Length: 158
Image (tube, rainbow, N blue to C red):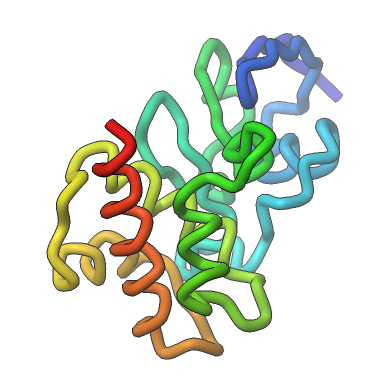
C-alpha cells in the first residue's frame, strides 16, 4: 500500500510519520501517537467526541484525512493542561459538567476554540458553540455553567 510522509505539530511537538492516504486524523492521533483523550464516537461528524483544534479552529478529526493535516498545528486534550488544570478543565470539575466523561474532551476543545474568539459569551452563545457536540448524560446545563466559569476565570487572569 502507498504511504505518504507527513509532518505535523501536535501539542507543540513535531511528528514526522508515514501514513496511508485513507488514514483519518483521529486514528493517527489515537493509534500512531497514543493520544487516546481524543475519542471516536460516531465516525460521521455527528457527535463531536473527536474534536481537536487545528490551526486555531475546532475540527472533527473523524472527517479529516491525516494527509490533510500535513504542516498543520493540532491541539488535543492532552495538550491543554500545563502542570495545572486549564480553566475549562477546572470548570468542568467545579460545575459538575461531566458525568461519564466520553464527550468531555471534545466539548472542552470546542469550548477552547470558541472562547479564543468570544471571551465573554452569553449562555446562548455557548450553547450554539457546542451544538456540534453531543452529550447523552448531562442535559448541557452544567456544561454551559462550566464553560461560563472558565470564561470568567480566563478574563480574570489577563
